[in-house]
Length: 372
Image 1 (cartoon, rainbow, N blue to C red):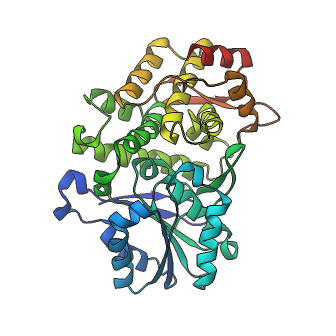
Image 2 (tube, rainbow, N blue to C red; image 1 turned 135 degrees about the vertical axis):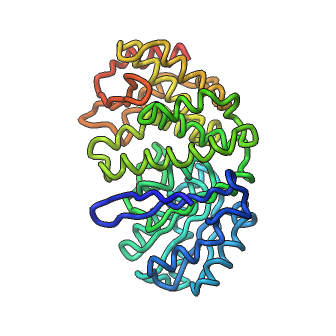
């Protein structure tokens, strides 16, 4: 097991990562079967509300329930529809209804078993139920493992923008079992690789170089177990380092939004049905890289290296067909990162280093989007 600490002033917590894929499941000292034991050590209340979606619950729900009940927890569950378009207040209402029906108390814990959508909604429900209760993340997608489950950003979408409704609410524990990636659909695995590539560009040049050396990044079966282990540990460490320095995005944490500015606009404008989050981020990273080149901030050779890695992961580098470029530019104005009416972009200056700027002319954005 690898243990990474997210060090925060009020309450630090552990990211516990098993080595199932790298060391074979029989030898792994940590899996979802140890969730109850790990939570017992945190001295939480006995009541647990487990939130998942039907597919994930079918694969892993019984194991998680058995682990929690064996540790003495009283568990009720709530299954929500999967998909970004269901990340709404209506879905969170179902969590609230289950919590009320089962008398979930201030000492109780909500556990998110699923991908980023389930984690975001469960975290938001935990942040707002009784003004805040305990929350544990058990991510089952690569994207959630390396990004969404860490850092305490929770929330839901508004019809006009992604994650406009939310709260910062840190989990008490993040438990990552790499073996669950074996049942992850290929498209979802690739979506997670977008966030991993992001960490290479913004923070970890060594991780970027390790991925460049891999022949394929588009399917779990074609990636060496050692690289999967490195992807998980280095990505989680990068997120922990950034969040530990800037919990609520007052400064440094904004770099984690690399590729997300244009990416979120694409997701919102396509109704969360055409591209998934990782695919949108990949397109956003390509756009950000080209903007940086046009502004003289980044070398063309490095943006070509980034784009090659994105393509190696089976991710798109072009806008979805039929996208209205002016609508994208307009959608940027309702992005959460807008300050004083100016859109803030995260732009790379070299592999492993980025900067945040609001000095990107609209005509440059328009030109890049037209080229894509």
